[in-house]
Image 1 (cartoon, chains in turn yellow, brown):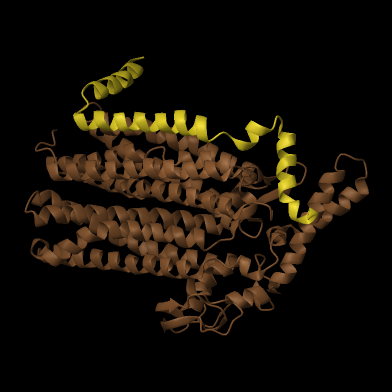
Image 2: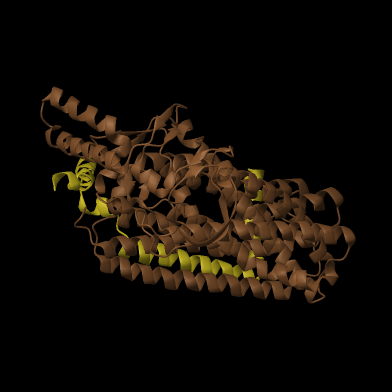
Length: 73
Length: 521
């Protein structure tokens, strides 16, 4: 318990006493992660196979069909 | 695959290259500076000299800036795998899954837990525990790099796997064959040591700026001393692992090795070109000279490739025509197959997979078994089945040639910097050598150029493959709208450029401000 308390205080004091540079860096990190996960991932980067196929068997078949197209041509 | 738009492939490649290059802009400094910090803090703990604490804290601030701005930029690559490279992602899923899962669980938590102690723990935990945390951050960062490099090495040399024709995926047969493949070991060690050299150049360059400005002389000299010794040792290691990598490329990816040299017709005792220019527009089967001019070290390429001054190094034309002898993975001397034969076998493998897929739901076991046997016997040439023209398997020779020379040439420049810096430190003359200090500052962007050039050799040189001999780039790409790829390409270009500018601006501002006057106790 004592250990957990000290661990919590380390983070709490660290964030509370953070200088301007640290705050700016955290702002950059937050904006960056928001853009990555809320804009890029949600809008522009759906998982192509998960989005278009319902089961692993369908996904596997789709990829095998893509892989074997030259042989069918 | 003929129906895939070439512009889709090119924009998808461009998008991936852009994000990988920007991601690698942040990574090597994190890898190397973490160890330099740990060494500086170790000296502080051993000597008790508060100046070393001040020095450690200053470089730790720069490390923090780089870490904060660079963190998670690699996640974009994961997004791209799922969206733009879905065939590839599915095909390799099980091979990549294990190493990347280990990375997520082990390295990330090790790194992120102890990085908090490193930044917030001064005066809160004991000196020794703080030092341990700094070392663990350094090891955690490098272990993070280990797993992704193991995955990349597997793409260059797919070992320890088995293709499952029912699922269309590769499955890991032996983790250790993947993890300890000679390509993986060399790639990991060579890549991280390039990060150590870059970080040493960075520390020397920034310190040189202070010396030129006649500021922070103690910090600058002590930092240069640590970075010089570390950089010198790591340069030796870089050369050693570079030698190991060259051997692996020569033996596992001979086309890449030939392209790096612009070598079309190989011979025994092949020389290594130090300076030269490949002939633009040269085809593998025309009569043009391979190079406009060249100066070479006799027999050196043979030595690099096989540690034998008389070894035969096949050129691009030899690899396409086959017929030369080489040692396979089992150590047996065998004759190289021609492109034509590999393509024929690849087509058999692809047709066998197609036929098996058509009848796998039936109970015609003997026919299924026949197709499976055909597939297994020819699977190692699977990717060649997509090509009809031999020129399609030749990577871009000028890019491979020049990138390799930029990487090696700059590597030797940094070695010179470390050696001369050591000499100046011993003679106590470093403050007076203004030309050297300017060279050290200029070397910072050159170090980034060198390490990016290394990746360009590795990745452009292995084209047209995403998985060597098994999966070409054009097959790996998803059938998505090219406009979507174009939009995200420019979105990434803008986002990452903003991040890179932020990194440089914040970093230079912090360097100009300098360290805090008191390192504290």
